[in-house]
Image (cartoon, rainbow, N blue to C red; front, side, top):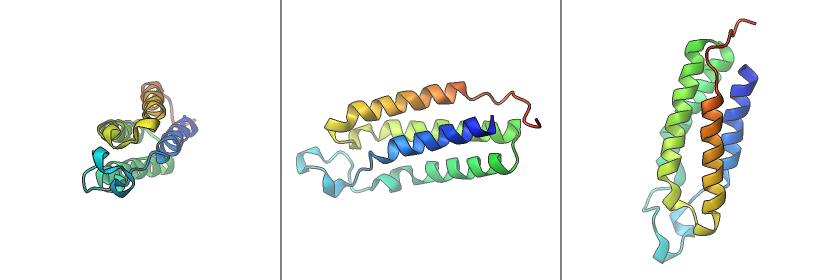
Length: 116
C-alpha cells in the first residue's frame, strides 16, 4: 500500500509537470494565466502533498494515508482550476492526466493494515 500511494503521487506529478504554464509563453490573445506562474498558483498544494507523502513514507498509518488523500484531492482541484492556463493543443492530454489522477485517488485504500 505504501508503494502504491507513493507511485500514485509520483505518477501524478510526472504527468502534470509537462503542462507547466508561464504567461510569457502564452500568446497575448490567450493570456488566461494572468500574472502568476504555475508554481505560484499550485505551490501551496504541491508542498502540502509532498509533506503528506513524506509523512506517510516515514510513518505509514491510516491517518497519514488520509492526509495524502486530502492533499492529493486539493492538488487535483487546484490543477483543475489551471486548465485555462494550458495551451489548447495540450488540453486533451492534461484532462486525461487529471482523469487518471482522480481514478488513482479513488483507488487509494487507507483502510489497509499498514503494520504488515
